[in-house]
Image 1 (cartoon, rainbow, N blue to C red):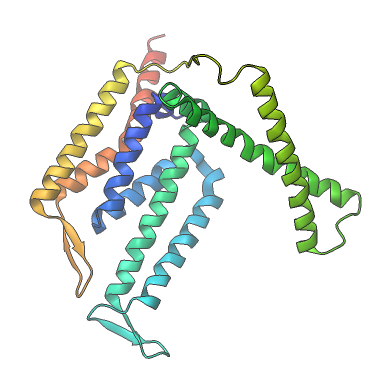
Image 2: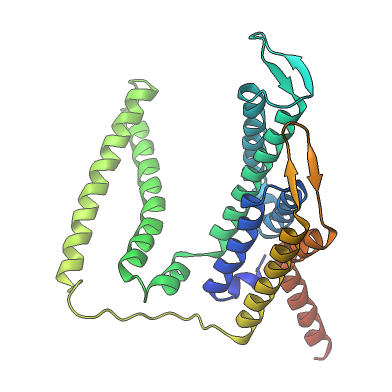
Length: 286
């Protein structure tokens, strides 16, 4: 599926994801955490469709593990449900806190997966290429090197298997593949450095070119994100919304904050819906 929001300027994308993740991560409020996870799930499957199911299952498993860790080590809270063999109580408050922490982990993984799908290496270069060209170059090389490294390791493993050199056990075979791949990576880095030096890298002022322009729609989107963020911050501070887990669970919500946060999280999907609507209108006029 083509994501229209992905065609926005990279700066716009970064501002949106920073706002969405910051609110749900640093503001420990159960309602906002749930909203962020649900919206991230909707947007994730809108982009990935069935291809993203495997990663989503992994996220759920990570959430479950994170949720189970807190009650085992934190025994705070007044509502004791049962006792461990060590004599320590497992409290309702620690379970709920662990569940919220697990959901935060899950939503962050989903948002960053979406962010990674939208922000290609050329967008990173366009964003910081002029301000910090060295960092932009390193990021670009890493994005290029990781899949290349993985592909070479897989090819090496297949070649070893085809030639009958994989009879020494999994650990020995894995170390052999790793050694070959690491040697190849070091040799490739030396070749890259020599090539860059021969092409005059580091001499003179570097130029920066990209096809991304900060348009009116980008400005409107950023102002929209800033407006919603300001509403959330102001009302959340005035209303003192927060979820307290210890010694007993106390939750203070604000309907306006939740609505504003839902709209903020769903804005990219609303952009896609609006673009589809415009497309159908344009087709009907032909």
